[in-house]
Image 1 (cartoon, rainbow, N blue to C red):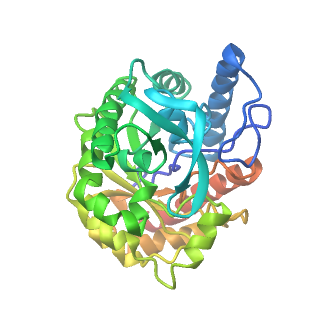
Image 2 (cartoon, helix red, strand yellow; image 1 turned 120 degrees about the vertical axis):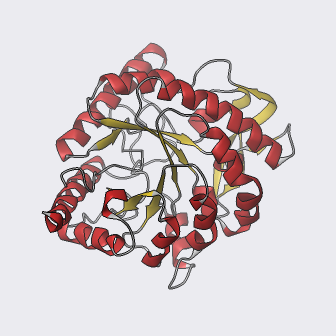
Length: 343
């Protein structure tokens, strides 16, 4: 039973003050050129050490080398102008300055492979690496070239698959594709028509486990306000889980703690490993281990314990560092409480 309820995180962690601006989704770097690369490596090593100290079983690079989980990938591609950004409505709720697609997309060189290799060298624990999913990429840019969202998503799927294969070859245990756009009601038709299929293409043929992360967003005001508008039950997952259930993806990362998601919806994913969000990233209140344990036990009423991995609800990039790591310590302590139920 010692292998039960292995803990992990959704992906991002706050950056050190010496690396970038704090509490920002698009923080400004404090270095340039080779000095920035070295600082990002140092921050990655530190993030992994802190996760290990907190007791996290399946660690992440903390996305320390990315300014933003989507735009940093986009800016690594040919055909994308990251210098002259334009404003778009992201996730149907807040404005953001995003890169512009100016010409045919191409991946002439790896984007994140080097940092994945470096992260792998830093730990003997299982390591997860995250990439944005095709639909979320399409929803996070200004397109001046393709003018066809489905075609653009297919282009991204090919590029993501090439990147993911090289990352997996570095010894990564899990590659997770982040698709918060799957939870946007106006995009449900896109999810059904081509969102899931392009995600499957992005994950095809990988030598490691594959995951999709679908959440209700970072703990920023537009996301919090949106959640308040969703009523007493958040049933977005009910629309998309059946589509995911029939896919070959191994894991689904979802939001549970302090959410209004009907927990019984987990039954729609009975064939999947579930990364059960047991830490609220939209609050700086640090959960007690007992609160974490309560969320995990709720999930276990509808999921096989061998398939449950306690996790954070979403990325933690905008949080205070001391708060984020205190939350991780509570996550591991809460999982330990529930493990004792099986002794």
